[in-house]
Length: 268
Image (cartoon, rainbow, N blue to C red):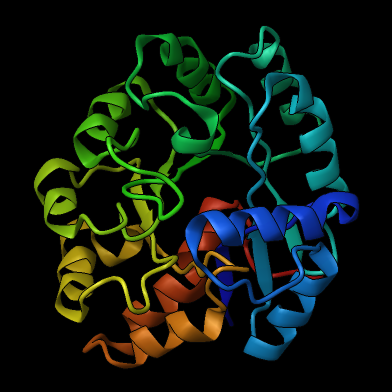
């Protein structure tokens, strides 16, 4: 079984335009056309049973629309998270709405959303997230579409973590291109987790082993960052790691099932 905890898709009306811009900004080649159906095709090809779809609200005015599209894209192997924009005046109300709709988690991308992860203005949002019991996924570390300084470094995320009581996931092995600082700055804690997205070709094999040991295998979630990395690439990285089948199963699906509150994987 394989659960991909980090994927992206866009509304069909804007998918082609979004893919062109994002690919141009980052220099990366997309492996889907940006739509949810194309993501499902990639999942089938690479043996993924369930994907977590992570939308990003990049404009306060598009908050509800972005979330509604993500939720509508769910089902048939995809479970959709939501997002809120830090500058949206109704961000706290939107969190309540997402909870009522059964959404389990949220995604923040501090580069695209233009905020530092430890900015004091985020405290009430994080506290509301914790009150409602959401999972929170942060893009962490560098982003190939932006220049430094980056808005979610391990040091800043460690400070923001103090405002949470619900699970936090630092994407991209805790921070793109920043494994040593991740291990130095981010604590091993009950609510602290990482996903393995965008690791193939960017994360040194020994760092991957060290990061699993640092956080504990029970706090590591398989992810790809599709459409930018296909799941099979990340599986190739795991094929090189000296880890047990028990650890592999925990990372590939058991930890995700536990975090999502699912006893087993039902068809959705």
